[in-house]
Image (tube, rainbow, N blue to C red):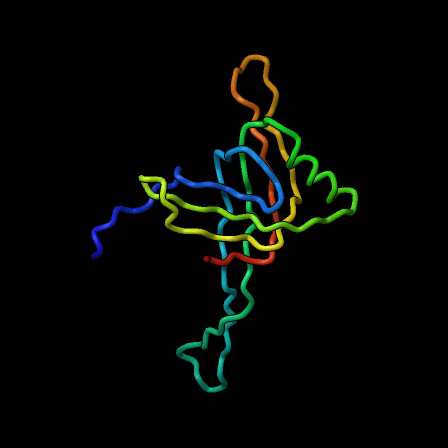
Length: 140
């Protein structure tokens, strides 16, 4: 064992290529999955081969308090046919603020934009949630 503590999920920075956007309170959807196809050989009835197939990536969701129009404008451009793909980077930091892990979602663009409900009986911050599709995750 290397003696390190697990990294904490609240120490991260999100960068969106070409955009200046405030901090994000939540990042969801950092997933990749290899599809598996079963293959049965004739005369062999006690097992089936498992073959790796396509790799798919989950949609990435970023959430933060609504403060400006940057992500709305990007999503609005996509809605109007101007699909500008950008790299989204999530950089995980250790307790001292040093970057320890970095993942990129390549060629991302927003496909869903949501605000939390307005509620006069509640004093919560309005949260903007934006879902992105992308061409894959990679580490650097």
